[in-house]
Amino acid sequence: MSIFAIADLHLGLSVDKPMDVFGPAWTGHVERLEKNWREKITSSDTVLIPGDISWGISMEEALADLQFIDGLPGTKILSKGNHDYWWGTTKKVEDFMAANGLTTLKILKNKGFVVENTLIAGTRGWILPENPESKKEDEKIYLREVGRLERSLVDSIRAFEEGEAEGEDTAAKALSEGENTDVKALSAERPDISSVRKIAMLHYPPVYETGRENGFTKVLEQYGFDLCLYGHLHGRAHQSAFNGEKNGVEYRLIAADYLKFDPVKV
Image 1: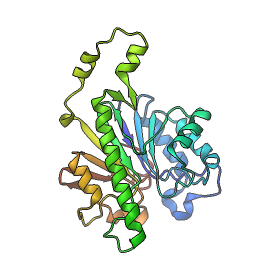
Image 2: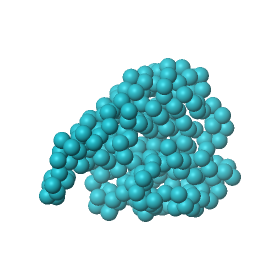
Image 3: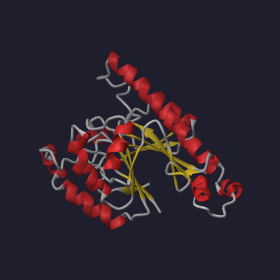
């Protein structure tokens, strides 16, 4: 059981949004993505997809794209990107997925998950204050997203401490199914949280090539996260991505075109 990641799928199976207008790197990207995905990912794996999932502007328009992802192997944890206009409230999205039998998709917003003793947390993110394009009205959104990241990080730690796996209390489930389960033994089997790997997923870059400190980097460091995955940057912008370690946190760009539409094992 492994964890993979890829951002910015930019699917448009039910809308007229051909991605090759953004350059030859995007030609046939859906077919290439599916081929690479099926060659390496199994049903027992988990795939992190931080944003820009579908070009649909409503859940109905995004349905074909979500069905495509649902039909691929593995459990997928999705978070919102700046182009995911179809994304409503968490309840509306989860109800829509349940109504349409999308059973392998999980929504990450203001909460965290535990996958194979790995903490998974994240949020959309926003333009950083150091960006010359950042305006006064961006500050409020930026601060809100920093708060959402912290809530997600805290919840992932809570989920681990309460023995949850992929959002489900495994001890309670075992008891409800009548298994002869020693809850204390189950808790004792979990490693100390200081030794557990912690992964954050954002859509916007949480740090630029300058490596300058900001609200996102501060909370990631405060809660001891090891790896932060992000997307959003395409084409020439790949050159300005921060890929590397800063104060104990590794940052990695996983935009689909940067990965050549091949999910990376993390």
